Length: 450
Image 1 (tube, helix red, strand yellow):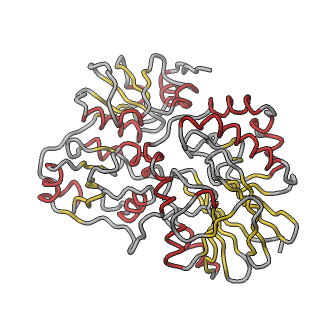
Image 2: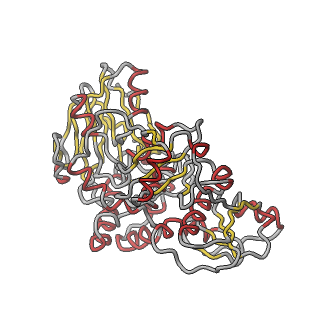
């Protein structure tokens, strides 16, 4: 059965992959499935499978796990680390434990580092290893961060990550590597990396595997980690206890303008999911711009307090279910509903944001809100820098004259501009495009920092 079909289920927004394994007998195994099971259900329906097993490599920080939902509603058998002390039905596994999948077998490998209870799962056909689900241990070209459990354990876990990677590297070169975290994940993965690999390819190309010394490995790994959304700090405990079960698919409740006004008067916040051009032309004053795109969930969880009620504004051609699912998969349950009819139904005052092209920045102060790694790789000369995530709390003191905000395309910049407007900055515009567009329009070089 060495041709077992393993189907990646990629969430581009979170930068993660779940995996569906066709066990060949009408049953399936899913690894690291999020609460948003739409892709998993579509893949199982196409293959006529029943999800018999759900394996969890670790207590996830970046999404709500779908394991409990599957266990309670489908009778799926959950396989997870015994050290994780999950409080819902599952089979707790320890290092070396094996599970008979009916022809194939799954062997648990203790691989602490990303979390203290992390397991990798080796998929075996007889005695032959086919591939390994590495979760947040060995990634394509990297390894996942170790600073999400507790600050005082970060260094210890980084050294454990070193040992875990070397253990995995001892597998045969032809063994497939199926990580959960990939490019775009805030759990640490290099940009542009492929989603899957092999042990041999990682041994030849992964710079972290070339570091034999645990302290050198820890220093290199920790130097590569950037900031992460605030909701990462509480989701592991949500997933350990077991997320609330969904009785129905999440949805946006229609609210008339009077209901929206009442909610705003009581402290609610508007999240405007429309494209940046639509938000710029007119929006509810004080609204947060978060254009609907794959990264919508991450920025929602990063910029909005989890306990703050939200009202969504969207265009009619934007999928309300997609907005609701993106909020649900990060455990954001504070959406009160949506403004029925969108901005066309709003009769109150509106606010606007100016848009400028790359050749229209002029002598304005420039604020770059990309991640630190992006900024250092190349930015407009003299540009100020503040990551978008840092603007969700106390906004730093910035020039009070004309300010042009930029990112890579415009979406994050518009989110930043809306936050700056809430903080009292009045002369703020957003540059459409990114640093490359500015360099092309002006003929000037970007500044890079090593």
